[in-house]
Image (cartoon, rainbow, N blue to C red):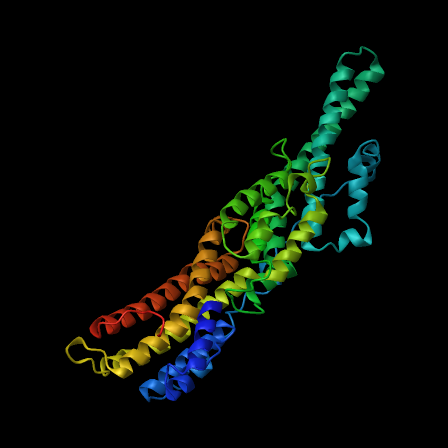
Length: 418
């Protein structure tokens, strides 16, 4: 892009192009894809001496479809009731402390991320307490005293109770994860409220966000089903995905390669439950980048505007004369407009849309298969990742095919103006 602008400045200085072309193209391009689309359409309108469709200005950018409100998507999860006798019996076990934590005012008003971290911790503690009681039961079985037999019976009863709690919390864990994905402010902003369009030069935290999203997705793995911590398995998923994105050019790619946010050293605590601080860090990256919404908003913007321009150009380009395949001056100017704005500015953003779409495709496939996610939520994801991307691909292909036909008829190739 810098080389193109430098070349343009040289053309402007030495006067190789006519004053009319200098007025037509200018010496500086737009800095955003929105500006590039506007400039592209304006130049085409001037050269073809035809007004843009009335719908064009209304559809440069339009909001994404609304995501269902969090109350609609939220799972109601019933708590486990513990009587005082059971509670006091757990005081020698860490479970008593964890249960007490949940019953504080802060514990009762946990954010979705804090609740998931808590449930992960609770499940690990339940497992530890159950194992400790089983060990105590085994020790008591080796004793012959009646007191030992009573203790043995008590340990068995409490172990059975804890096992039932663990089974219930296990069933509910995916719902707690779904409440994070569907209801946390960070995810809702990232999925539905873009602050910008994709840019070739500046996509803050975009690649780091890919890793963060895969990390969150991995937390749906039941944390007590393996001796390996959930957060450690999550970091592996993120780091494996990091390898696939670190080949991208630019500073962002280099930053991702050095991202330590989801490293195994920092994401797993000594008990193997979710590290709340790491989880919050990843959520902040997701909130900062808002990559899915940015991607889908850019996809939608390109789809709408290229479709309008393709419809306009279909008849207009057919009317441009290229007798016996010889390009007229008008045809050459149109080729230059196509190169300078579409090839140099718009198409690279389209390549980014493709790039991030395919990087995130396994994530969306996994989410769409999750029974704990609401069907309305899945409908929104499917609308963007399947229907929206298909429409975008069709719009981009139709626009390129139209120009290929025109350039072929006039024996022109899309090269930089000289």
